[in-house]
Image (tube, rainbow over all chains, first blue to last red; front, side, top):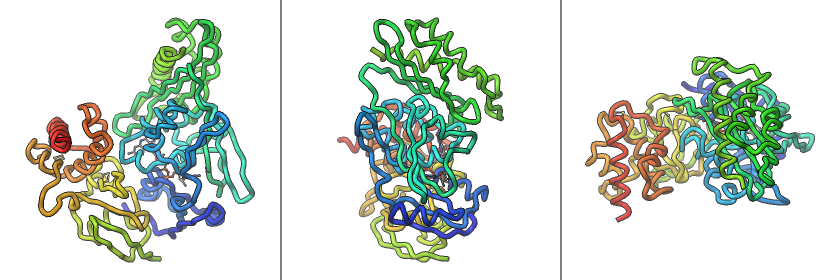
Length: 284
Length: 156
Ligand SMILES: Cc1cc2nc3c(=O)[nH]c(=O)nc-3n(C[C@H](O)[C@H](O)[C@H](O)COP(=O)(O)OP(=O)(O)OC[C@H]3O[C@@H](n4cnc5c(N)ncnc54)[C@H](O)[C@@H]3O)c2cc1C
Ligand code: FES
Ligand code: FES
């Protein structure tokens, strides 16, 4: 399992990286998705642009109520950095649930979302968090929402030659309950189905509910129908079950050797209810 | 096509000309002559090839040698100091944490990472810490025991 030959570049500025990426080159972050594909020769880039020396992509900072995370921040950094655990416990939980320690040590937030595996963990959290993804290209920068970013299986809003530079999520308000629940495919750790939930209560009623789903369909999505069914209720066990029952409605569920479409839809309902119940349990 | 890389391996500086596509595991085994890290699956799943790069456990079959340029690599060969085995090595020996031994170098490197981050892990934490390492022989229980024994010794 040897990759096809390629040129290896380690640019030291973002401009240089974007220049090198212009004609069909591949960016390399943690390599946890790209290198296996190159070894299988499913990816045969002629040039690989390693982002590890590009400054500014490793920062984690809070400004104006938002947590900003550089594209090259690793899963391990997200799961272990106190500022992230405090500001976005949901994102930290999604990071902690990925693969194994060796994968989390190298894999990055930017690489994971750019790869857009339909069973990846971050997308569920980013949908529920209504994250904003900052993208840089030779023509300048733009920002898109998670809902716009994740288009389909292995397909995002990124244009060729563009890079994810930063992901921003809200600093979680006190009293918001969050939970990421995933049914893991045991051999790989990927999600058969993963559900991220955020809820807040006011005056005994659910005042805010956000639900992000991964693994079920070709792309992650925000289950707005579930949110609408739950908001305004008291969040009782019955309310949760009724709302969660709608999670797969209108979606074409994936089917593969690990789980049939029906089973995935069933899992989505069960894990949505679990995630919501747990999130409600800590909301106050 | 080839590039020059310079890195530390087990405290020694190595400089070599390598093709960018050369995997770190092949570089370690075939160029640097360190056959401690094993190749099990070659598909990023078994962890037999685990080494540390700048203190982080990685699967060296899923990193190109050029990515390790300028970095500090430690393999299982680098754990003993002056002929004294690392407490994890002794514990794997004493607790029968190895049977055929194929997974052992990777298991120990992943366990080392675990003990650096969680000095006194519980059973669940140990199993979580070596989740990326497969063993076809032991059934894992003796590995868990070995990591616990090493933690006790290192904490003492
Ligand atoms: C054994 C194993 C188990 C895994 N289990 C899980 C799991 O349970 N859940 C999960 O979610 N993931 C899992 N993964 C995938 C892992 O999370 C990867 O880290 C992630 O998918 C890719 O991130 P990376 O930094 O390694 O990117 P790379 O592999 O370096 O790159 C992936 C793709 O993104 C592009 N890219 C990288 N960075 C950028 C950027 N900043 N802007 C634009 N494009 C970019 C690359 O060109 C490439 O096409 C697993 C991987 C392995 C090997
Ligand atoms: S040989 Fe590297 S993970 Fe199996
Ligand atoms: S001891 Fe044989 S594979 Fe673990």
